[in-house]
Length: 404
Image 1 (cartoon, helix red, strand yellow):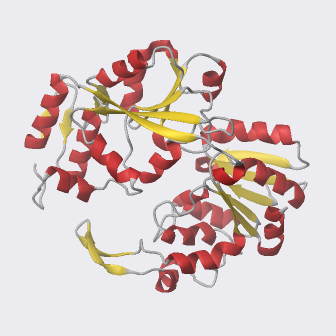
Image 2: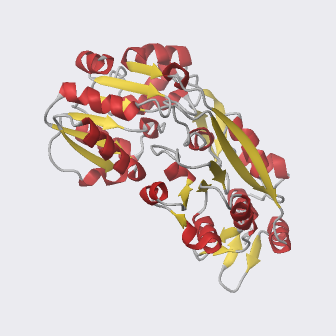
Image 3: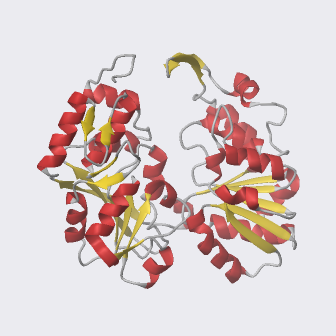
């Protein structure tokens, strides 16, 4: 097996395989050649049950411990191999995130299998810390990202970030980076696996209530709306972007921290449109789940097993549901809202894909007053929707000092 051969020779194997092409099973099978001891599988909470099911069906000779990354600090005992699912999450730069530091601290001496369909979703500079977690990293001679960047990144002109000058490290040298890691990589596409399905995207435009229109107009003008339960505050450009995006889908998080449902027009439109279908719904903000529950009642669940065994729809937050799960039992995927991140767009829309499914339909539910269309245009082109884009789209200007 190629994966096992790379582990033997290099101590690292990176399975860069597109969704639904068998990354999990490939890694579990490779582990059976490595050890009959203990294997630690790091993943997202929602993916744990499906990974454990694959393990039981495979019946390998080792003990498998599956845990979500956020609980990694609770793991005890020794292991012989680490499998890191959706490993691109460890690609933060110029500094590693907390979870990446824990992997490095506890398990860097062990052989590792990395799994991701999108190893460098936004920048090739994301490669460094993904390999930094291992003592076998091809970049181990570089003690930190900054040293590595001198050779592997085109550090561009300084840009203003948060009022301070900072170097832009996003332009990793693609060819040089790929050449340095290619010996550890195994790539596999859906096309190579025999997939013939296509994703067709459709759009549902919803007229929001007069109240929603009025609130957004007032917020853009006054930057604050005072209410009996709390205030809607947009005293910075970033807050204004977030609040407009929330309000356009009918909810908002107040300055008290409380999330409120203001307008369930989107939820009603979804309920009526897909009355006779089984759907997977992606939402962005927590209060949007409340809106869906109020509208759908007991016909909606957040539990994947319940979704698969009943006629209920499932509602998943985009970031937590975009990876590691299958919604193959859904007739359609429906987006209550859209995330600012390009990776969320490309990963979550592929949740229904299977080998024998020829057509997948994805519906985007956009309001008549929000910025969803502009966000969609950005992420479809593999670019995040950023504050600078929002500022340009809305001709927003703020003074350097606080508004209040």
